[in-house]
Amino acid sequence: MSRTRFGWCLLAVLVLVAGACGGDSGDDATASGADGSDASGASDGGGEVATGETFPVTVEHKFGETTVEARPERVVTVGLTDHDAVLALGVAPVGVTDWFGDHPYATWPWAQDALGDAEPEIVGDPATIAFEKIAELQPDVILALYAGLTQENYDLLSEIAPTVAQPDDLPDYGIPWDEQTLTIGRVLGQSGKAEDLVAGVEQKLADARAAHPEFAGKEGVVASPYNNLVSVFTPDDPRGRFLADLGFTQPSEIADLAGSQFSADLSDERLDLIDVDAIVWIVNAVETDVPEFDQDPIYSKLDVHTGRHEAFVENLSPLGGATSFVTVLSLPFLIDELVPQLATAVAGNGA
Image: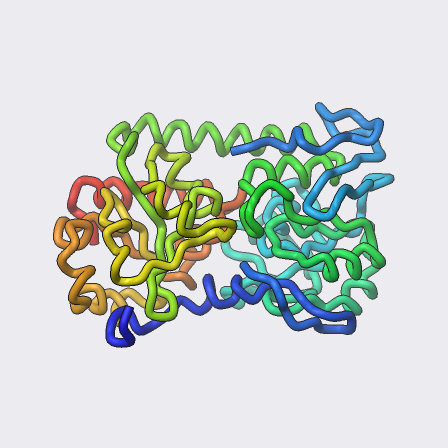
């Protein structure tokens, strides 16, 4: 898009993810990388795959496999959303990564009850990993599942403690919430609890689909204005996968354009790909940003806009955070708050 069209950008969700988790050794390393399945791809190294309660446990990932010899007590999360699953399993991590939102201990409202009185150290953000601080915490395991570790990152972290990196068969930052939860459950020796948590959220998703049969087969996308383009999250990204879990489909060209990335950046010529039955826009501020959509000479003429098939969430609001996190803890809140807006968007009564 030209600089007069959607000239603002979504800093917290896109710019930060694009600079995630790279760098050299030292206390803080500068980033060099970018931003439903089950956990059955990971072997158990002699333990019980069904429960994960017997150690050692071995998990396969992008850089090979990692064996955790005993139930971890001190857990550090480098993955941007991994601490949600850890907290859901009743474990307080000693170190967490702060993605965005500036919440105490990097913990959003939906996870605060699970955090309780714990005060984990902040050990990085999407642009840095504080290797020395992590080492000082003496973790038993380091989790980097919703992450974009480089080989160098992984090697440095593995010198500190067994490190479980992102999957090999998905884009970086592409692990589904259920696989994230089940894998972390195995690593923490709590597979049974993880399975129960996943089943509860899956039931809530099923209830939402049943309550809204009109979603089935409709085209829906989650998008953000970004660097004078429109960034659309693919079905391999948690945000795109959430809509798929509700019954929506997505134009296949979006995944083709994204390639191995978690989103596709659309120029003016391809805005037809977001002329869908429902679009969720993640914006910085509704009051100031939404008027840009009315003024854009191309987008303002699309049926998705003129037909009021839009929902808007502010990225720093609890709903905006939940839309980007898509974890076992944020999903119940996300379903309760965003599904009604999707229903009005599909009906042509959106914002």
